[in-house]
Length: 184
Image (cartoon, rainbow, N blue to C red):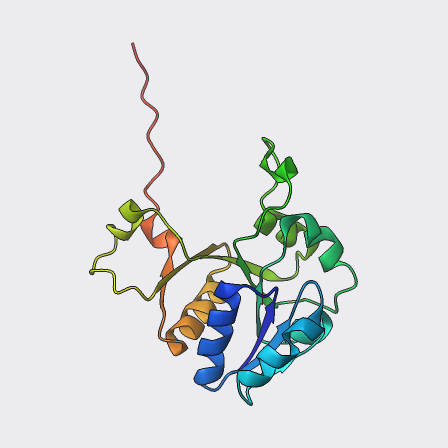
């Protein structure tokens, strides 16, 4: 399987290494400048290649780590993204603008800019109380995700399993909506 990784950080590089070690072809692309990662990509083995963003988005699954402020600009001029699975990792925040009330999350921004793609939000850090909801004792290989497209989430979960990661869908923990109580 081809995996695109756009936006390089410790999380995405760890992800890329895991994918390459199990035989997936990994297409790396920096959101800034690729040449500074040329030597690093070369040390990651034959399954890793440094490419342009347009080449990276041609992969079967694409992991995105894009500064929130750059999402709109980054999404311009992409090839057809119909039915593409985009794993949107937590974004770095370089401006307080995105913290204003009623601002869209980066996942919402990406979904609105690429409505034909399937956006799945990936989270690696979560509250310890959430971990206690797991029916089994956490093993340290859990990776959390959420999204609206069940088929895309199933593909993502299967992909995570190939990396020896336990994909945990937040939907599995959703509680039924609260019942409104009237006070007489």
